[in-house]
Image (cartoon, rainbow, N blue to C red; front, side, top):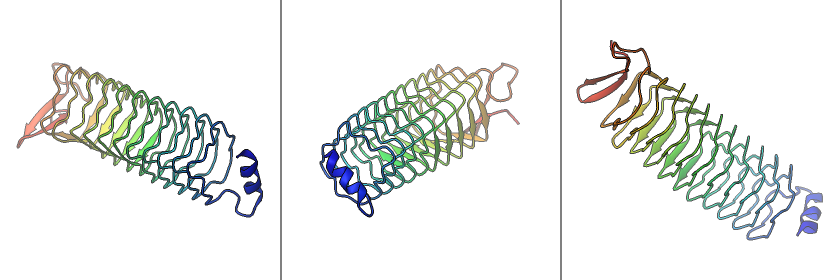
Length: 258
């Protein structure tokens, strides 16, 4: 297969748009390869090296990327549905506009990744690392992200629903204009994080979360569970040293009392 790929790479257009469905490419070195629009559905890329490869618009449905190195790879508008990428290195990868429905990425390294416009339902991000990732317009539904790490991550206009972040680490992260519905964040860490205009819908749980130094700015919540959360010092401290939880017309507003 390596010889065949080398031959194709020498032809006009290289590997662009190639049909590689179900191919066994495990351990293959495809660094800097141009695989735009290629069909890699069901391909075995276990342990492969795809550093800086361009997979824009590629079809990777059901592909196996376990232990692969995709650092700096481009997956813009690629289909990553059903992919298995356990412990895959996606540091600095561009996943803008892609889909990852039903994918399993436990332990994946997505630090510094661009997740703008990523849409995922049923994605497994357990123990994944997403430090400094950027996620403008990302949509997550029914995602499992327990023990994941999002230190210094940036969420803008992100929508999250029916998702769990048990013991997730969001320290130094920034959430702006985001909506969280039926999302569970028990025992999560939020020190030095900032929430700006974050809307918390029904079914939110922050039980046991540590948010001692979070800055809240115009955040709204409905039916939020805060039992056991550590909130002291958040926002402008009240005389009790805790942020104000003000109820107006059935809506809870988190932030300094006016």
